[in-house]
Amino acid sequence: MAEISGSIAPVESSVIDISSTNSPRAKASSMDPKNVDCCEERSKSLRARYIYAIIFFTINLTAWFIRDYGHSVFPPTYYKEACGTTGHDCFHTLGVLRVSLGCFIFFFLMFLTTFIARKLYEACSKWHSGWWKLKFFLLLASMVVPFFIPPGFIHIYGEVARVGAGIFLLLQLISVIEFIRWWNKYWSPDEQSNQRSCSIALFTSTVFYGVSICGIVSMYYFYAPRPACSLNIFFITWTALLLIVMMVISLHSKVNRGLLSSGIMTSYVVFLCWSAIRSEPVDEKCNVQKPDNGKFDWTTVLGFLIAIGAIVMATFSTGIDSKSFQFNKNNVKLEDDIRYNYGFFHMIFSLGAMYFAMLFISWNLKDSATEWSIDVGWASAGVKIINEWVAATIYTWKLVSPVVKQYRVVNNEHTMQP
Picture 1 (spheres, rainbow, N blue to C red):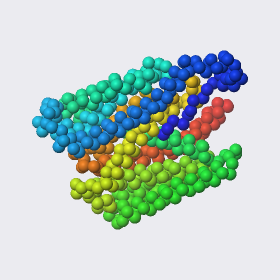
Picture 2: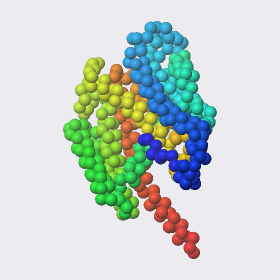
Picture 3: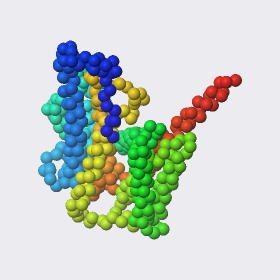
Picture 4: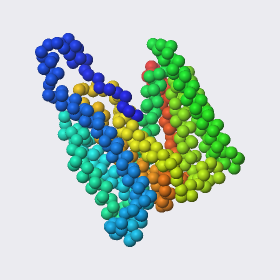
């Protein structure tokens, strides 16, 4: 989620600027080299995050290429003590993990060197936004070193990557839910809302609920066509129950959050359920996908690229959304403050390196995934279902937590009165 907060200048300084815009002193201050330098550094920092996203996307493509075609393209010049005599330990599943480890090393080093940055003119900020030639060699070294590490350590990294990918999913859920809360607050009607905003909120919530219901019905039709598909029936039915529970709680008189936020959240939950069922193996009797038999066409390539783009977008949007994880969200940003938390940004990308590794190997450290596949298998389906249930739990707690806190405060006041 893109960070919603903008920069808010101090009130006193804005008043002074307005009252003295035509004075020579104001013109001199506007041409202050420090202000010009801050504007330039701010532009560099905003451009830098897109460069890091392109780097992350390129590494994703590299991991896919190493997995599917590395063994047939690269000559046998690899380090045999790490890759084995046939090179198998540097391609396929272990090849993806090695590329992921290199990506993790690079972004974790960037995290260690930028997490203390607070001002645009600091050395850490300039390092984050510049020095690209030096960072290119750092990235190259980070990507090469894992291919000299013995397979045993790579397997250990794979186990750690499972945990890191789970943490990434949790942070992504929190970011998505905070975005939904902001969207609901922005569009929901209140006493000062005009008729247009109320109509837009009502129309939007109706659309999201309509999409959710159509999604439930479609999943029953395509993925649970017979009673023997008991697992899919359970997943879809449980998702429908979650939809009803979130809607009822959101409309409860003590919660009173309206239909917009619950409508958006139910659509997201239905999408996660559909994605989990789609991740089931293609030879499963209740999966309507046809086995590809080792062949692929343009739709397979397009779907694969869209999936990689979704990974990069999820990592990027969570990385720039540090405000959702701050306790005090009303901090006033000064002119020379950084516009997003560099350390948090690089930490999310380092966790994203673990996440894309799990998707490319389908959360399975033993068997290699098929060509042009991503996040397919029972392990992937289970992770997505758990992700769905955790998302619904966190959102429900966000709805009821203010009521619970208020109830505790009232009880404490009653106990203190005697």
